[in-house]
Structures are given as structure tokens and as C-alpha cells.
Amino acid sequence: MVCTLFFTACERASNNTQPSRLSIYLTDGASRYSAVWIDLQKLYIVTGNGSDSALWDLPLTKTGAYNLVGQPGGTDTLLTTKELPATNISKVRLVLGNDNKIVLKDGSMQPLVLPGGNAQETVLDLKVNLLLSPGGQYELVLDINLPRSIIPAADSSSYSLNPVIRTFPRGSNGKLSGTVAPAGICPQVLALTGNDTLLALPDSSSGNYLFPTALSGTYELRFMTDSLEGYRPDTLGNIQVTSGNTTEVDTMFLQPVAVDSSALPPSDTLTLPPVGIR
Image 1 (cartoon, rainbow, N blue to C red):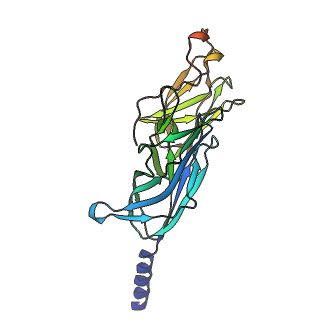
Image 2 (image 1 turned 120 degrees about the vertical axis):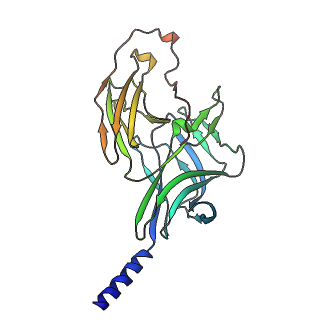
Image 3 (image 1 turned 120 degrees about the horizontal axis):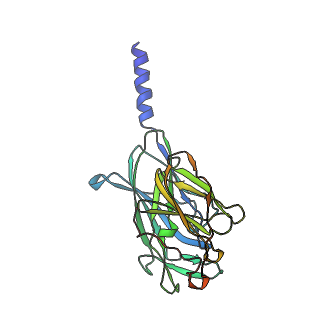
């Protein structure tokens, strides 16, 4: 019995010293722009708080350009994987270079100005509260909210990036999907919850749309119509999303309306609530 207790204690001690494996992903998604390129140079994590904090340099799978615009369903790109001791992660720190660009729908390219202006580097600290247990495997997703983050000048001659970034463990998010009819007359759907706004672009032939990274909460959907098609925009509220599940929304049938097209704003006009930082 003494030997059994001895070996059990040794095994327990060994398990407590096993490293954890952390992988961090960057997700892309739908956008009104053809491409949004960010210049990612370094990635760190901060563990602990105050005098107990420590900075860890996590090597990137590649440095340089990452495109934040992808397929409507979203694609996750692995940024880094590293073994770490059991600890609590309080921040993820991104360091961006100054070679950031945006590609408009007409194919033209414009520089994307960061809060630091023309500084060689811009540091972004993202608050995280992730406890790593010995021997655990963890996947953290970074989701840059493009509708909130990109700020065009009044005359659209320049574009600024004020990043609003959500961080969440993979699997803690849900999905939100549905269909808008008639197809082709709703160029964008907004999902709003609190100070957060997500964007989906319905398929022009089917009207199907998908929000692949909706966090748990209550959402309102806003269906923004193409002003030249003569259909009224509409909203749908009190939509519940839960972690790990896909919420299917009933088809939204938009109603025709008589309009004077000369008095309407351009169809790509996007009105958002006040910007909220998360």
C-alpha cells in the first residue's frame, strides 16, 4: 500500500508539471471591401498581473501580410503554437508594422492608417482571461470586427484602422444563419448585440447568410436593402445565440415599397450605432 501511494503521488506531481499547448488563430470573414491587409510583425502574451506579470514572445507561423477578408463562413489562420507552463493569460499583444492596406471593390488600393499614424510599429493589447491547466490544449481565436474597425474619411480619400478585436476560446462561440427573400436585393445583414456589430453578406442567388463567430447573447438583425430594388429594410429582434450551437432564423421576406430612387442614399451606405470598444 505504501508503494502504491508513493507511485500515485509521483504521477500526480508529474501531471502538475506537464506543459500546456496554446494555439492562437486569426479569423477572417465577409466585408464590403475586397481585401484588408494587416502587417503583423510580432505576437506576445502577458501572463499574470502587476508585479507578477511576464511577457512571452510567441513565434509567428509567418510575419507580414494577413488578409482579414475571406469567405462568408470565415476561415481561421494559425498564427502561433507554443507550449507554456500552467498559468493565467491576461493579455494578447499584437505588434503591427506600417504596411497596412485596403482594397476597394473597384480594385483600387489605399493605405490603411493605424492609430499611431506613420509609426514603424503599433502595439495592440487585447484583454484575455484564460487559465491554462497542466497538460491542457487551448485554442484562442482573434476576430477583428471590420465594420467597427475601418473608418473612411468623409470624402473616402483615406481609411483608418481603429481595431476592435474580439478574443474567445474556440468552441465558445455559436453561429447565426438564415435566408432573406427575395434573393439579391439585400446587400448586407447586420447583427447587433450591446456595442457589438457583425456583418454578413447574403448570397446573391440564394439569399443565405451566416455569422460564423457570434458569441452567446441576444441579437437584433437589420436587413439593409439595395435602394434601387424598391424593397423596404426590416429588422428582427430577440434572437438568442448560445455557445456551440447554430441558431437558424426564419426566412425574412422583405416587402416592396414605392420609392423615388433619386432621393435615396447610395446602396452601399452603412449606418452603424456608436462605436463600442471590446
